[in-house]
Length: 288
Length: 133
Image 1: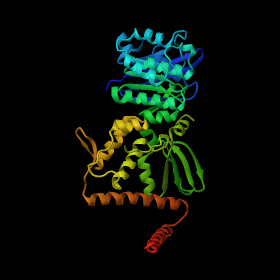
Image 2: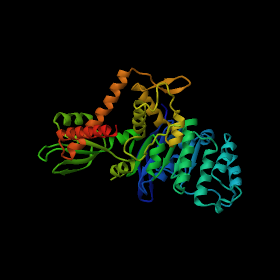
Image 3: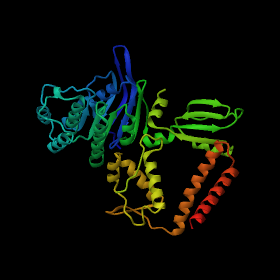
């Protein structure tokens, strides 16, 4: 399968602080990828690099099979992007901004714009500067969705939306995913949003994508284990991220559940309790 | 419209949560034989989850023989022998009993004690029924 996004050995530093350190990443068509990372991990830098908004030091990036900084205008129009901060001309009215942006796209959907403007109750005669942060974010989302893109990149899309607004935004993305088979990459701090809509989760830590896997697989493999054994039984838990030995046994968090080891434990009559974890805890364990 | 309940932030993947709910709803007769299940799209939109998640649950239920995919109709509950169905129910209860015994063991309660408690509960229930009559 050809990848929609393919990154190899991406490096980027600001002054003498290195942010991305030889990062590689492949996104397949139809994937909805949630990108997690601590503050300052470089999520925005990574997303901006993909879009050629931020210069990179070295590495290769291809989007739709083309080199990222030589994208054909046809392929450029297939990408929708919602930045973390509004970089649109704020003295324009919503209507004027929409009409301005529309000129650059041949696939612009007026229908989608009208539908979202009315559903999200935006007064399109108002200037961008007069809108609340949540409303501005909605306008940015509309601008990104209107050209009916094949690849959507969101940088903290839901940060300034209230819970109802966030849920409605997720609904819209899900509709697009089921109808158009688009590919979505979004960075977020809100793991519960990611848990609803993503099929894959990526973690950016120490300049690299340190973890990239299916969300379901992640929840099935990154788990807490309680091994009910005596202290003198010398048991080593495989793929251990963090562990503690108690008089009653061992406690640990693993990055992978080793089935062979589990079978061995059963044979030795050592009881192992497996407790699944939510994504927030998984994220904290994997980046600790 | 059938409403499923999920908790996205639980450590149990959403497709598994859906799978066990629907499995139970088929076994306890909430969904009857040949009844059509809501479409993947419908469920995904009601629960605000990725449609792939719902497909995965439906696919697994089909694989295990609970559902049958009908052309143009979507998923319907498979008609199965009473014997097979009975076996499925017993398997499910068996899993629950294993879990119960494991929990009891963790609390330091013996298997014998659990059996005693079950017997007492059965006896109490019978007493109540007799009392009502």
